[in-house]
Every structure is written in C-alpha cells, then in structure tokens.
Image: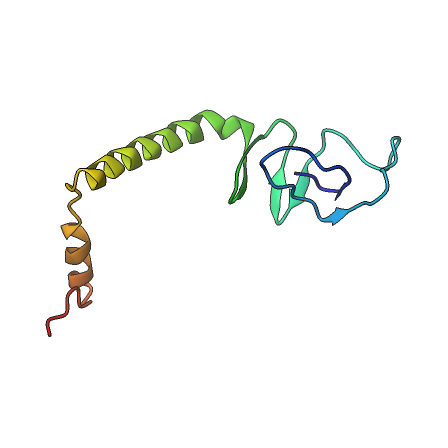
Length: 112
C-alpha cells in the first residue's frame, strides 16, 4: 500500500494499492515525507497504525484501538466458526430468519 506511485513488482500474494505506476525509478532524495498521516480512498492512516489486508482489500486500525478491535474480531471469528461447525453437522437452526421476515410481512415460503 502506498500513497504514491508503485515502481517495483514484488513476489507477494497480495495486491499493490497505489494511485499510479512509475516506469522509471523514483527519486531517492524526495519529494516525499516519512511518518506523517496519509489518506487513501478517504481513509486516514497515521504512523504506527496497524494495517491488515486480504485479497478483498485492506483495513487500517488506529494503534490505540488495536487491542479492542482484535478482541471484538476474535469473538466474532469464534462465533462464525461455531456456526460453520453447526452447518457442517446439519444442526444450523435458521428459524429465527423466517420469524424475523414474517414479522416484517415478507413471504418466507411459497406453496404451489
């Protein structure tokens, strides 16, 4: 991820996010700054923020919130793994979805 042009191709399984490509090498002595906030796609990233990425994109986590967000993400991940186990075991009860849809007046099954 960069706020400037991308110049080199790396052998990594992750995409490179850059607003441009430079076919010739960048200047080694500027222009540019280090350890300053940047903005990419409306997201402000500060020095020391935690950057997480996967094939779908990237996420910037403010360093002060990293522990809280990690705990919440871990809890969510554990719940999703339990749900996946229930699906594999054929024990995933989705009746609550039909109940919620029926309460909103949606048709949940069609009879012919």
